[in-house]
Image (cartoon, rainbow, N blue to C red; front, side, top):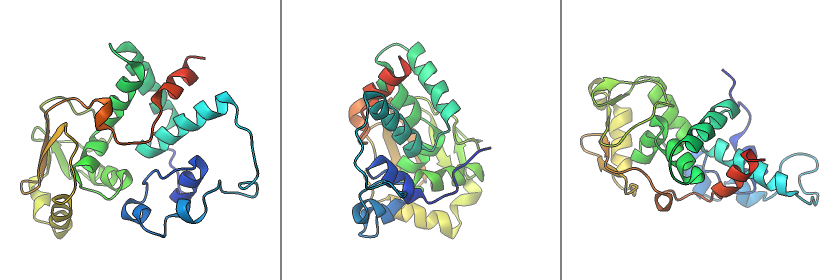
Length: 208
């Protein structure tokens, strides 16, 4: 499977905004976007006039990189969002938010979505009591996502649970840090997604 192996900070600099791909580091003075607020590469500081298509493309790439999704996957999510009732852009973000790796990240188990994805792949989480190791698995309304019983006693998850206790949870998730579990009590709406995303640009791009 294709995966990005270069510096994650380059992705943030390319999009010109923080994508929070490296967890707590993104909140410190070491963040590359704050230190070098221009695109990477030899011509990164050159002035460039971006076309309407370029703006739309950059927005799509930004969302892909935030959630760590490949191009074909992202296109499939868009097609599914179009099929659903409601606003396509909001449907798209809802599908992305309900990925298992993102739910684990929203629970506070992982400084970044990449770390949460790795924990899922290693089989540390269950959905309604059944072990799932597929990061893209869709979590539904009333589903219970929990740390696997055999993983709860490890130092790693004890530390993660302690750190997650102080984090603000999205309104659509009911989190029990002591039990290391969370239940989806509502479907995410646009106001719940605190990301600098202009989803209408992505809809316009795919509607060309």
